[in-house]
Image 1 (cartoon, helix red, strand yellow):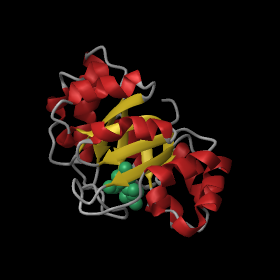
Image 2 (tube, rainbow, N blue to C red):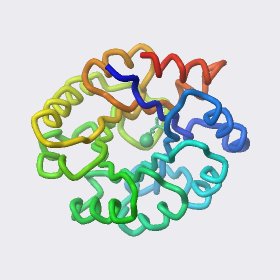
Image 3 (cartoon, rainbow, N blue to C red):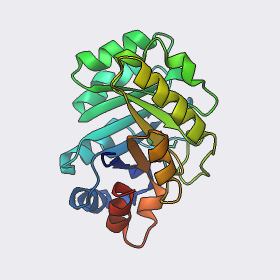
Image 4 (spheres, protein in one colour):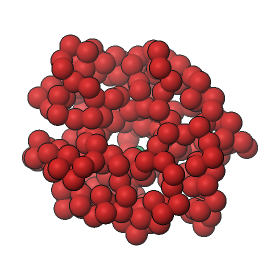
Amino acid sequence: MPQPIIAPSVLAADFANLEREIQMINESDADWIHIDIMDGVFVPNISFGIPVTAAIHKHAKKPLDVHLMIVQPERYLEAFKQAGASTITVHYEACSHLHRTIQEIKSLGCQAGVAINPHTQISLLENIIRDIDLVCVMAVNPGFGGQKFIERTYEKTRALKSMIDSSESYARIEIDGGVNLQNAPALRQAGADVLVAGNFVFRAPDPKSVITQLKNS
Ligand code: DX5
Ligand code: ZN
């Protein structure tokens, strides 16, 4: 099994020292930088937006994995591309015309991801799975870092893995929310390719070593 892609979530970083936090990620074994955008409408919290993403991009030596937890994400795709996004992930639950939105992300030259909330069935992705680069399986209800991992995520991950394997899809499976060293090995076994971790990385005494340990999970 190849090593997982590790994407620390900046939502748990020290916002007053973002440059230092990005530097830490640059020097670590992390592969991507996960950027959580929340609008206070799709989710009950507001994080940060386009100027902060662009500022992070200025210092980042790793690709930005932008997770849009916003309504009408199609209105902001171009702006996040300009701000430095490599991957843009939109929520299944926030898109009436998901196929069109995915095509728009791809036409900007970004990788296209679709995130699903804990209540959303994997089977709803059947008609879109060949068109996307990534599925982000939410292992918590989106809106906040530091929440408890929902155990049913293992089963959903296995179902998604088998859908991907039985179709001509090349989509990666990303797990977002409550990821730690306890659940990482089982998530890998279930088919996860990308592990997002916020609090588990940034609240650790030695974040770089935690990233390395996740990478070896
Ligand atoms: C939750 C966000 C996550 C969050 C993960 O809405 O999408 O990316 O930052 O944080 P932890 O790892 O602390 O659950
Ligand atoms: Zn996220």
